[in-house]
Amino acid sequence: MTQSTNASHCILREPCRSSTDPAACTRLCPHFIAVHGASGTGGRVAAASIPADYRQVTVASSVARADQPKAYAIVDAYVATFERQFDESPQTDRIKSLYLYSREPGTGKTTTAAAIANAYLITHYIGSLQRNRRPLERPVYFLDVNEWQTQFNAFNRPRVPDHIAEPASASYYRAMDAAKAAPFAVLDDIGVRDATEAFRGDLHAIINARVTSRLPTVYTSNVSIEELAQVFDARLADRVRDQCAVVPFVGESKRGMRK
Image (cartoon, rainbow, N blue to C red; front, side, top):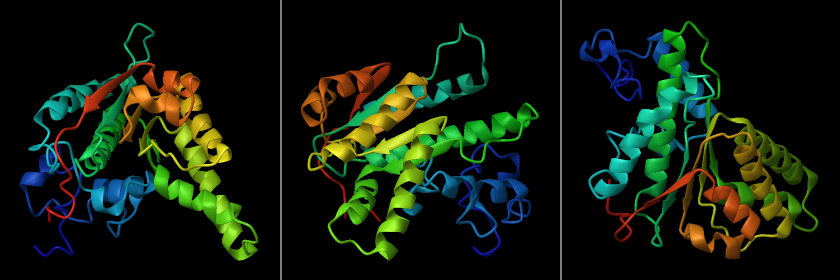
């Protein structure tokens, strides 16, 4: 089959029983449409704002797996806890948060965070159907903190025209609300150093809302968790550390070396 008709890049392909039958695995599959949209660029993955380059990556297929075996041993155990989202017993351990850290950029943190987000989405979608529930439209949200800060700057510079400021402001606050409310979130690159107090306050508000609501979050950063108090403040650093496991990523940047 041609690429235009099959669904070979569906993140449900690994757990799907139809994936071994090329005739059954097509873009007309209702589950493909629910997760990726009819065009392959929408659905719940797009609603999650997972960057386009990472929308098909899974924990099993991640290119970072080979370079980061110790990190992925933790990640594999972590995604196995995602079934807990359906257990409402107060005795059940909640899903914790992860802090993916390396001093060097380009070691696979963002790829891994996106893969984890997709794993949560897969577990939520399949688990909801198995329990005769309608899957949430946005069980996961991925916030690129650098891009979000760019939106903030776009409507906070002096003399910004309204036709630029208003869309940027609206997009910024939609992202903030989504990041606060999603059952599972990725906050990618939280170690922003050159930021105004107002922007830091908004990022603090997201983290505080998620911790207070006991919502699991994956953070990525080039700043160690011990140094967060220097970037933000001690209170926010304590919030991030609460129920959060640190996953070190080792080695040098692989950016530009992979296809």
